[in-house]
Image 1 (cartoon, helix red, strand yellow):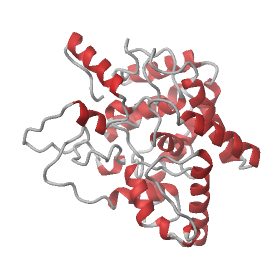
Image 2: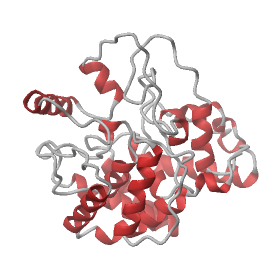
Image 3: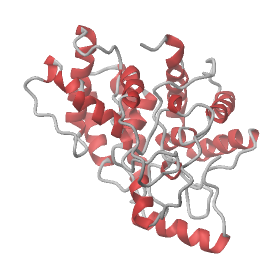
Image 4: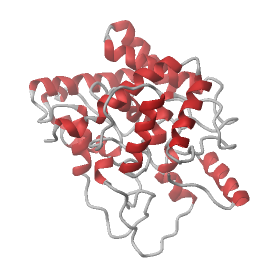
Length: 318
């Protein structure tokens, strides 16, 4: 079982979430602060729009820009400056056990400008604020508010299972991370707990907000009773990647150096100071393979391909 220091990152992430809530209606300043943090560490802002500089941003994407495929040392340095510019008074963690990591191209939770709905980013803010309120007070009104916001966000481009990852980032002791390893781990282990004995749990499609909350509720009940063998969602997230089958000898390689195209996110603890070198064999990496490895839509791929054609290079990883 992991120690308390392994999950010290949760305190920093929750503190940042509290600070971000203050910028719901002041997103211009929020983006300026994020740019300031990136500039302080000598890193470029991730490409989140066609013109590379975002005009708007949701809070989950804020977490996404430093919870993507970075070396642990770079993530720690970036978090240090985030803590400084946002006035967060917590010790910056030196390890990120159980932290789900997005694919390099999957940092944004919204589609490119002109391809997203007018209210898409507002809807993500609504889900974010509702999640903080629910974690603080799980009253029926707060539950209904969260479920409605969750369901609305799930109808948008670029929002799939990654929404549960974002919720886990902001309140990791209340919300379950349902990335691909997490879903596999749940079905193999937690679904067998007495709390789910009368349920027909199916995680082949993203659940509704109410079903997602019911899943989280029953998991916490299992933690309290000791029937799951695990004490918390961060522990599950950490264990889920230790339970991932070994990668096959042949297959596509994604940007994290793994060969299972379904494994889009990987805990930082599993990659330590950088990713292992990819296999020396040559693999054909076409549009279909790229889309399978990311949360992007076909239109996003076309936009990136257009940028590459005209600029001749892309920054894939900070």
